[in-house]
Structure formats: C-alpha cells, structure tokens
Image (cartoon, rainbow, N blue to C red):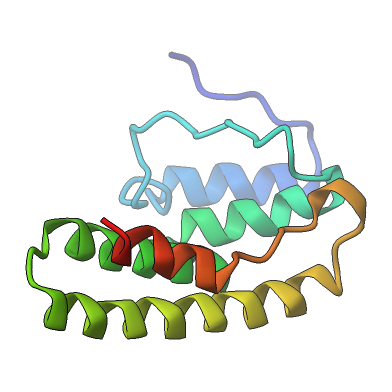
Amino acid sequence: MGKPEFRDDLVGRKIEEAAARGEFDNLPTAGKPLDLRENPFVPADWRLAFKILRDNHVAPEFVDRRRAIERIREEMSREPLEAPLRKLARRLADEVDALNRCLARENEFVRGSLQLAPIDVEAEVARFLKR
C-alpha cells in the first residue's frame, strides 16, 4: 500500500514529517481496521459523542444499570429458596428504582420516540416471586 499523497501545505508537510519519524507506527489501533459502524437509531448530531463513549468503553449510566438488573434477574432465576429470593427481590427493586430515576434524567434531554420507558418495579419483582 502506497504512502498517501498530501497537498503541498503546512498540515500535509507536518503529517508527512511525523510519519517519516515513525510517530504513527505504534498507535494502539495500528494495523487494525477502523470501526465505522454507526447506530442508525442515534440522531446524527449525537453520533460522535456515542462513538467517543464506545471507543473508550464507557457506557451511559442507564446501560450499566440495565446490566446490573440482568445480573440480579439471572441470580433470581437460579435461586430456589424463598428467603434469599426475597432479598434479591429487594435488590432488584432498588436497582429498578435507580434505573427509573436515571431514565427520567436522560429523557429530559431526548425527544419523542428516543425516550426510554421506565420499568414497572412491582411487575418486575412479582414476575420472580410468583414462580
């Protein structure tokens, strides 16, 4: 693969000089393809922000809270005893409440169909306690 040709301008010269010195040789993504995937559901003016978060392995708070809820659900589905199950149900209710507060904050900045619906705490807990 050939060296890119830059216009005869200051920026182009600086890039070529840096490349000649090997300043781009040991970058973390050297030799790896660029990740050009885009989420079609993210508004165009938010895509760069989401890409920066994704590239740095940072998830929005509501994503982390949903993951925590999934872990509690998994524990609950494996728990045969009622007393530990009730303790997990309290943890689940607390985490769902925290998620709903987080979603309310997020929804202040998002319009229309991109708003995230809250989770019904009672229905979520009842789903596991009625088995």
